[in-house]
Length: 394
Figure 1: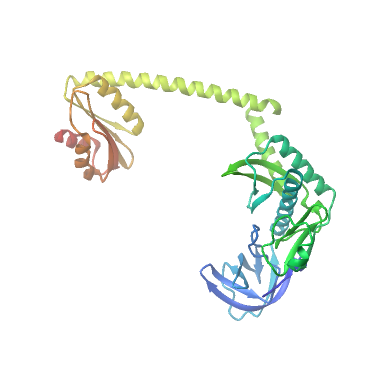
Figure 2: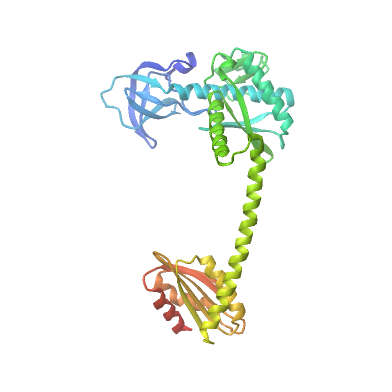
């Protein structure tokens, strides 16, 4: 086992070590060291990143008792010693998020009887699953306030190695996952938890916690939050969005939601009116097409760039009026042909049979009801030629 420097000093970001092995597995090239400050993925906390002799470390995993440092490129085989450098911002961020989670889970459990069942430290936000089916706004406000009071009160965050018997003397929040070499994270009066993650020396280094919302997750809820510098980033991000909205909608901040709501309602009303007008236009176009066909039993039209949905709507409007006619509508796109084949109510024929016969002409596919079929394929022939080939079959 490598000597794990991140347990001795989580703030140690530079170190030197002897190389034990340089090898490769299904994940890629990796290096095993005599001692390391790189934290491997585990306990809901992602791995550290950084460099070894300038070679980028992209993953760190504990495999078969080895801490494997996966590098983007293979270190030279003759490398005997390395200078390791940890991504400082990533390490501090993970320490803030993980310790913030401990405090949040402690307050939910101790003060409100809601235990945490899982924890995930993501790249943008953090989530915990809570054993409850609902969280009220009032409860979230109370917990958030108490969590930030613990952070502000600057409690020490201690780690101690001990046996399972010794750990059992503490008010543990959940059963231990190991029976030997227990590492206990202690925030006096707040939290006593077996944990292998990295943590700061005091709660004040977490800086702040902000809840972002929750969603149902089976019979539990998933709470999303951020801690530390992520709070500042989220505030900056949201302020930029708000500033841009105020530029587009020159109203006071407290009136923006009301104004946007009105704009959405107005837009929906306009969309509805546009849909109604487009439907009326299609009805007029359908009547014009029927009139121009002069009683022809096969009505065919070829369009440029019309969407398939428009073809479908137009086709339905035509066969409602022309009950004794076949219909062929083709739309020529840049690289494809789309079609609608249909017939009126007075004709008894399955248009899927016709569609199957003409699919090979355009390497296409499609289908539908016996009286109304749609599909498409490659534009390997001209639209008018394609329509004439279909008409010949009819």
